[in-house]
Structure formats: C-alpha cells, structure tokens
Image: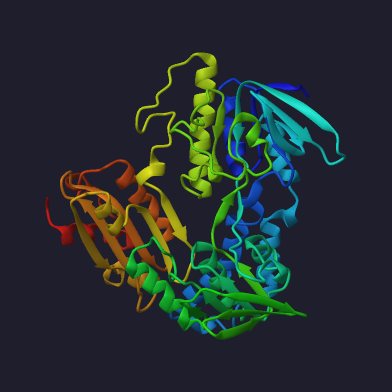
Amino acid sequence: MSDEYDVVILGAGAVAENVADRAVQGGLTAVLIESELVGGECSYWACMPSKALIRSGAALRAAERVPGAAEAVSGGVDVAAVLARRTRIVHDWDDSGQVEWVHGAGIDLVRGHARLSGVKSVTVTTSDGSERSLTARHAVVISTGSDPLLPDIPGLLEAAPWTPREATSARVPPKRLAIIGGGVVAVEMATAYSSFGTEVTVFARSGLLPGQEDFAREAVTAALRDSGVDIRRAAPTRVERSGGEVTVHSDGEAVVADELLVATGRVPRTSDIGAETVGLTPGGWIDVDDTMLVRGFDWLYATGDVNHRALLTHQGKYQARAAGDVIAARAKGRTVDDSPWGAHVATADHRAVPQVTFSEPTVASVGLTSDEARKAGFDIRVVDYDLGWVAGASLQADDYEGHARMVVDEERKVVLGVTFVGQDVAEMLQAATIAVVGEVPLDRLWHAVPAYPTMNEVWLRLLEAYGRP
C-alpha cells in the first residue's frame, strides 16, 4: 500500500465511504482510515439496528388494525427473535463484508487512529502502537462523525449510563429503562423498548421532538403514553447507581430503573484528530462551505456530522457525494459547478432536509416547518388535511389516525415544507422531498395524479384544500 494518495479520509463510516467512492470514480486514489468498524455508526449502532428493534412492534400493531389479520395475532413481539434479527442485520458487529466492498471499489483501508499532522499530512497510530504517515496530493477529508453528549448532571458519569450504542446493541432488554432526552433517539428507543414490555420513563424538559410541527409532537406523545411510557416534562437533577439499579432524581421525585439511556444530543468527534496542528479547535464543529471545503483551506474538507449542517446519515452521504466529486473536479482541472443546486454543492442541507422518526405514529417531514418558514420571513399559507379521510389510509388500517401539513410560499406558489404523521407514511416522503427541492409550482402539482386508492391521494386533497392558484 502506498503512503501517498490523492485523497486521505479520516473515518470509514457511510459518509467517508461515499467520499472515497466518488473520488475513485472521478479518477483519483483514496484511502480510508478507521479505528473501529468499517461502515460506521449507522451500520452497527444507529440507523440500522434501531429500526430493526422498532420494526417488529410496528408490524404487529399494523396487523392488529386490520380485521382478518388481527384475529391471527396473539401476544406481543417475540423479543428474543427481534434481538436476533437486529444482530443479523448488523452482521453480529463484524465488518468483513464492508471491508470486502471497500477493496472491491478500489479504495485502500488503513486500520488505526488518524490525526492531522500538518498540511495534507496524516499520522496513523495502529493497534500495536506503531505509526504510519500518509500524505494527500490533493485533499484530506474529516469524516469522523460524532459522539453522544453527556449533560452535566451530578452522578451521571458514575452511574455508567447507556449511550445510544448500548441501547441498540443490548443482548437483553432491561425491565425498567429511564431515558433522558426528547429527540429522535429518545423517542425511537422508547418506542422499541416499550414494545418489549420494558417499563419506560422519559425525562424531556422541552417535550418530545422539538423542532417538529406541534401536531406531530402531540400525536407521538399521546401514542407513547397510551403504550405505557411515562413522559415527564422535567430535567434530572441528580443520578445515583446502587447495585443493579439507577435512580434519577427530578422535581423532588425519584424514578428507579435498571438502566439509564442518555440521548441529549451529539458532540463532534474532533477532540483527538490533531485539529490544532492545522489551526482548528479540538472538540469543535468544523465550518465548511457548500462544497464541504473547510473555510480558510484549499485542501481540507469535512463531511457528515462534524460540520454540524444536518446530523443525518442520508444528508452526510449527500454531502460526501458532492465532496468526492468536487475534489476530483478540482484535482483534474475540470469545471466546478458550485452554484446553488449545482453538481458540487450540498444546497439541500439548508432548507430541504428529509427526516423520518420511526415512532408510533411515524413522523416524516421535509423542508421548513410553519414556524421556521415564518421566522425565515416567508409569507406562508398552511394547509392541513386529516390522513384518515384518504381512501388509501382507510385500507391500511381501520380507524386510521394521521395528519398531513403542507407549508406554501404564497409569493412563489411553491411548497416549502411537508409533514406527515401516521402509520406507513415514511415511504411517502420522497414525493414531498421532490416537490420541495424542485420548487414545483402548485399549478403543475395538480397534474401529478396520485394512484387510487393509495395514501398518496393526500396530495390531491391538500391541493383541493388550498384551491387553484
């Protein structure tokens, strides 16, 4: 293996892999440097295992809502089978298949901990303590991801809390689980573990899913409470662990659990990557332009969580494709298209980010919420529709409960944001994303005829509720 490459990438998660793949397809050489599993957080401890834990319960509840299937359902989920399926999906935390893909794509891999050591220079410390220096001819890319944020609560560290990694990789569910946080991870893990029969208590001072539309937050909160989850609008003041139990104190009350999950946000994994050697702040987020080039540099890029633009795997992979392509274009002297929505930028990070929370009910959203649009200065009109009134939804489940909202820019007559809440809405999100990204005029959307009877007919109903522009 060479010690000099066109592109040297710190990390080998999904984002880093996409940078390398696009750079190699663009005619460059690339190397990934990874100290853990190739494939990264999403493959082994986040997106994939978390959805595997949730899916069985969601499928069971969906069957219970359809006569004919409901009569065939008895009991709850088989927890052992759910956990076994999760383990298969993460390949029992074995990355050999992913390593095979890397090599097959023409990408080199170095195992070890990478640190920047100067301009276009990276030093790798291997497991045996030896060091290896790598030099980049054109670019170094930081794709190291993020770590869980542990809030400053007395006793928390000593209580050995779970992070999302422990929650998604548990071999046996606890009888009682306390969760600190109200974001996507907290909601999804509360959904999963409550389906296992675990007694779940959530401490969410600002409520669940801050940043989502109010109706979405209310629907998820009500459904989790109906499933037995205790949701408290309170912040823990102290944590203690004694023996096999952990006690969370808040507002003069104490909740005793077997495990405590902390899901209060993320911090960039930049504290030990040699950031100071090139003038960056260790432990800080990395500021980039829309081509993922770190501001103030002509050779250093940062993709994924570390740039704090949109902490979602799909957005990181989107950034990675733009970065890999632009690095190759700059290296080969090709034309760079860095205008908004151009081939070498990640414009969608700003106002067209899709996200699905696999809760009960599911929340699928893209673009701006009504509050965000107003704060951004848009003249908007909000259009709401009850998903239960759509013929396709009534076929999905008896007494279907769900809601759709479309946020319209009244000046341009285009869609700024869409939120769906309900069973099976995740697969409807791409159409909304296309409408937002493409800035499709409402008068043209009238000609996008939804098939009948599907849930996508909600688009026709939203347009009818809006009226002809």
